[in-house]
Image 1 (cartoon, helix red, strand yellow):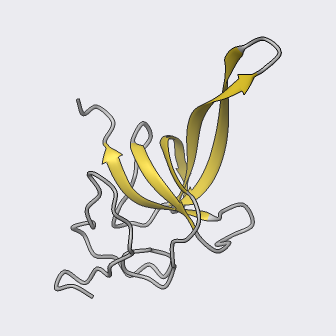
Image 2 (cartoon, rainbow, N blue to C red; image 1 turned 30 degrees about the vertical axis):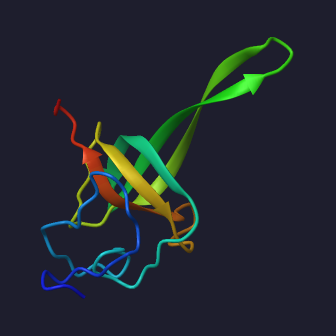
Length: 119
């Protein structure tokens, strides 16, 4: 652990820094026991009404060969939101895959890349 109490989670992403606040959440990748492995996804928080859980929506393009065009698709991911990161609705976040944390939660918010209302 570093002097701020955060551990190195092994992810190098432009603009990603460890949180300045310290939490005692067991499911936090920076201060708890959860390891981040697998996919890293960027998305926008669309709901933040659950306790320590957010819904992240990501848009992507799929090539449709028959029409020789791209189709826009969306998917929603439930992700654990540690109190030290505290992502709000409208934020652009980086989420990482973990072991299953709940029935529908297998991702954790690693950091906020852009806050809602920032330019």
